Length: 360
Image 1 (cartoon, one colour):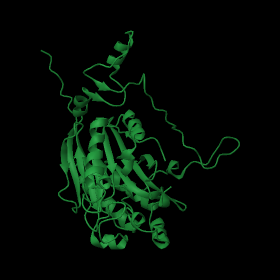
Image 2 (tube, rainbow, N blue to C red):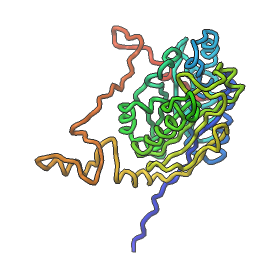
Image 3 (cartoon, rainbow, N blue to C red):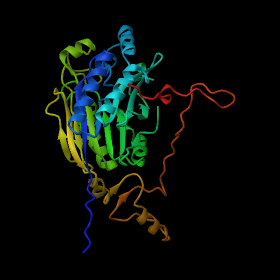
Image 4 (cartoon, rainbow, N blue to C red):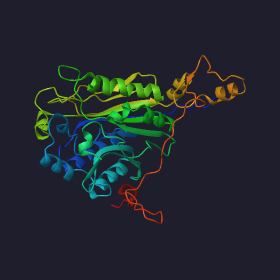
């Protein structure tokens, strides 16, 4: 009798919920490194951070006229790719021996980007991306990359999006098509629904509903990585002391970290909206295959598709809800447009592309 090999593959993933070291680059880097070290000690293999965890999300730009001195302070405490601070994080990831998707405000000259760096256990930055389209008044402060996923040495595909990128259907469809298996949803702090808090910007909708939908839609494990803020942090970041305005602006709290399975089950969540913790779950990658037996958004079950193509009329299998690439498709420009291009076709590569070897 032939024995069947057990192919179950379980990995440990972690979603960070923590308060930023507001407007303090070095303190933010030190805190990021401490969290990475803790995650490694707890056996986390893939770790995700909130949106612009360094130096913190500047909600002040949503609630009042941008303050030039505040913005200058924010610029000066944003991180430069390849800087000593950036490489300090890379070394922490290497020492912990994990994958980490780190969210930070990236500075290039006077321009800022909502960035995510995908770091592997060797400390290499396998991919660096910027939020494709800053949301609403973020365009005042932040100035892009269609690639949203990387594949690990264990052939696990990690993906990441920032905040309201999760509201962009075509970007998400492209994201799913890259085969995401573990998704890092990086969010700032958001208030629960209540007076003056629009439902669409609340933790319940933006954090829970939207990210959980991505898990089910994309057939992946999705981690909500969110910040939290204290009263002291609100004062430093010039956040109004009352709820209201065009977006959620809590004076404290705002965290909602969680991990969802491909079928939408909550596998783990933070204790409350003010706690600082790494929300951890051991996930079975076979659950992705179980889910995709019934649903694949990007692409159609190839066997079903090719069989039905032989028929005079192509029609979807009644028991299968997949996409119809024969009817609908998405065109994506996957080459970065340089800011300056010379007559011989050459151009200066971006700072992110000029990664230096990591040295002790």
